[in-house]
Length: 538
Image (cartoon, rainbow, N blue to C red; front, side, top):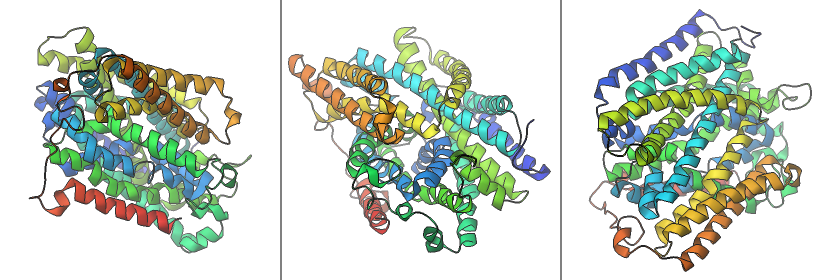
């Protein structure tokens, strides 16, 4: 035990203990239902869309959102909301309307498996290996963040926090597979929202409302677009073009449409309409998340003027400081449990994605192709153990980065940006060839690493600006190489592209369904709300 910022009481520990018991209980209850590979890795494709939608969002509502976005809110103001609105919603709608039909009709079990069918085995291998590496690196962020928070708030040691969270995630994921993870994520969703919702309510009440808070912050802190005319006009050091191309297009679409961590939740839906509606329904909640995590950052910037400055608290402590300020014993337990849930949710999502990729796209593809289904479930459970152990190691890598947000976006620029170029051309350009996809993916990934190591960090106004532009150019390299190689290599026959390329897939019609069940109608509703929000916070 070490020095703690908060003095948690018995009732707070009881609430945390109850959460652990419920989470572990779900894993034990579902253990005997995990009989086949589809059960363990894809929940038997039987989950209703409202559940997959909440899990879809909860899997993403991890350490980055809860800790990193509150910190960014305190540092950059409402400009951080771009990571949610332009940096998520359009891509989530695109996934639901255009990409999920390809994923669902082809019955692929993972994103790399789609690449195998659309391009070739070599392209699948590159993506499977790179994604496996990325997921365990990202899952380490959740472990590190939770350890940091509990070390500061309760006084647990860094190592103790890591081991406790790792063991709990290990048990419920290893027992219940994706189903356990999904139902746990639904519980975590409600815990996170309940635990965080009270902070902006209490904070705005103390400060006298939104306008009173804005009056005590820099002018640019309340706007999203008006200070993006030039990179020198805002604290993030980025212009509107960098935000639109780097974040709104490449990083956003690269993550939400090709990252198996979130796509896997939609795979578990019981039919195509449910799979399409999963990210679209989730986008309604996603639009509200900034009010839960960024506004607390703004409140902290007012209440703690020295935050982020020499001698003051770190930006990463914006949310913990507010929990300390507003939550009495009992309520503090709720806030701590919400943060614990968010970290474990992000980690569990990465571990289940890593497990599926390793088992199907690496182990089955290259080591043991024709084993009984029970064998792959057993391998999957052991892979959970391996993934957790690696994640413990990567937590210490995350600890060496000054900002978990910078670390996350750096990883996405390496892996997701070039992958999105390969996917986009593969799904919408029938002339893209197997070797075009392979060399495009390789070139984009290598190009991102070279850009990172060859261009000095101080060349950009901020780490985020560097991430946005690096992602854009990695996408350009991957797309250009894919096109050039495709023109000099042989494409697949059209018969092989059925169900894999736009124009060779019969999209379903939902005319007979009620409006709220139709993906296209719901997507339009989301877009109207999104445009309205951007106008209000221009």
